[in-house]
Image (tube, rainbow, N blue to C red):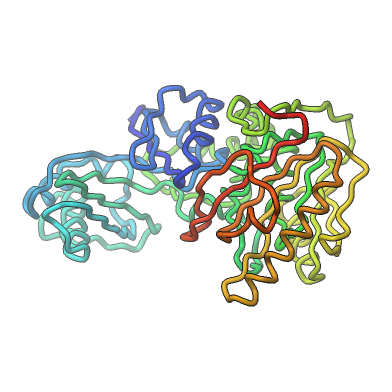
Length: 396
């Protein structure tokens, strides 16, 4: 099978950035529907999407779409799909289910019927049971308004799991979201970038990976390598190519930037990146250093430092941060004091912009200025707002 339908999932508010990344991979006809971009491609494109997309959540193969007003229709629709093209007969197949505004609403029953129909398709026998002694694969049956779409997950773990973060701080920022914010900020390699509340180091590490053009998926595994027909002999070559891909996501966001006036500055050969991470907790600095080493990025300056001490001899930089927000009342008040301190330090920086993501409802009031742009984003299941502040004199 040379061509099949690919679906790339992105979180709410991230679609435009993921679409720009897809254009850098040569996909110009992707159309987002319900948080997924659909287009046709082959195994190589499927692998490239998994390896190189920094902002996507998962990559699927859509096996088919059909009416499913009842369980008989669901069974026959799933049985008729070409499971054999991708799924080995001995695969340990898990099927998840979603239902929205449909007659079929019992998710466990949808899963059970779907699994039996998939086994029928794979074996040719209605009574057959899959041996399930092979690789673990996952599919999803999503029913909306009595229409079922069946997706085979090619990623395995979510794409935010780059493989470098093996320790976790409180309220960690997803790697995919950090990359999205960096792209939207207008920052380009060669310019300074600082996270004054770096936690486990995600913003700084994602920026350094962009600057070094390191493919986000180069150090992890994917489920598509276990698909029937996948050219395993080429996989090592594709992984090696991930270190030198011409598709730079920092370039893919050009034209999407919501930070006006920013221009990429040339970076001298061998010059270390001007990327900084600070945190008041020394344990977080140790964690950040560990994660940066695991990610294979060098030159990030991590240091224990209070936000009140934030200074820079450079101009034209970018703050990208996910500051504490405090779920309890006393913690929320402490967070607001931090925002005031951050605002004071930001005011002293020459020509810097800032991107701050937080769910705190009174951030702007505490920060003392209204954001130039605001965008609703989700960090896991937490609804947040990205507050963007442009550098002085960079207004539209």
